[in-house]
Length: 345
Length: 133
Ligand SMILES: [Zn+2]
Image 1: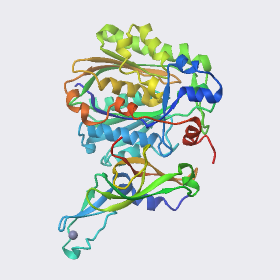
Image 2: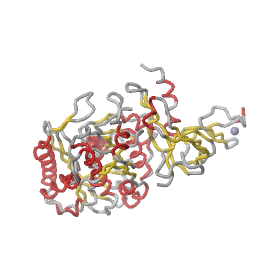
Image 3: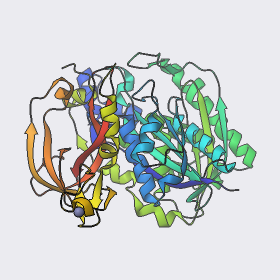
Image 4: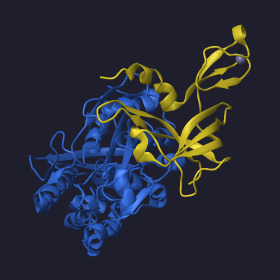
């Protein structure tokens, strides 16, 4: 039985700060944004967090395809910034989108790939007929310590996917994962900001895991990059996804529609899923999309996705990624610090 | 420990999804919900109603000084909003660059309403944002 995406929804906070403005405050110079290929990043409002972003994205997903929320049997929310250490984000999402209480929920954590792990869990339950629909969410309001390189890219946003087995907008044909114990990035319990292994985050972490999962899936399906119309890779900055695409043999044109990081920054668990949503926003029935997420720690999930006729019917039912990107209100560093609570009042 | 959990928990349907009531006898809508219709008394026929959350600002004020938990949010806008179905409610309006004006059309957004300090419950619920933009 084919299963996949029956609807999707996104949310990006409307505030932005320019990377050059952050560089100005820390005296890092203007080549930072060019080096990272990130020019602006999204900033949550003072009353937004991973839960409110997840709820807005999930409501958009419900609205886009006119889904009856009572059909949802599982809510899995992936984030590295769940506001409660104990009390699942999924409980609040379920109540806010009016599911029936008869659903299972758990929060997922796997750095930036918790959202794709949530999709895999939903696919398992849906394709074995244990539930009718599953809701998988990737949502984050990520933080970098002031002055740390992470501060240039750590952004906020999220995407929600309704996974089912009928009325598919896009079929998930197959997935392949690759996971190892690699300490490239972590945050210990109770600590406000993550730590990272500097240069160690590149080759042995991002590139090794993304290419291993991607090549594994291509080999298993006996396909080549040219078989796909689009590709989406996790976007911690603008450089990494472009370089990994080139390495694997995907073109600039294939990754272009899904490359949202230059305008909104790294939305962590939202990143790859926002890229996929931006691609679904423009894809035509019959198109194929190759998606590979990455989460530090470390692991990658690669998916092969085939777009269905139904996409045309649901596309305009909710705001697109570009709609959210175009609604930007700019902050200077002082207002940004107030928003992020970096200033103790 | 907090004593506020039961009070908050009971208000979740109202706060998250603007669940009120509707009397199908006289067609009056109530928010917050009422169990009895003051128009119809014993002939009332009350049913649950989920408000669309769209409405119009009929009065507004800007708060510049607030209690400890709201300090970081100042200045913020409080407004009386007339919901499209009729009832009026007080809510916070997230303003765009043009501020909040009487007559402005609004839509609901899901936000943090407050927090019980660093350790307590996080209160989520509905605020309003300009319908356009
Ligand atoms: Zn009545």
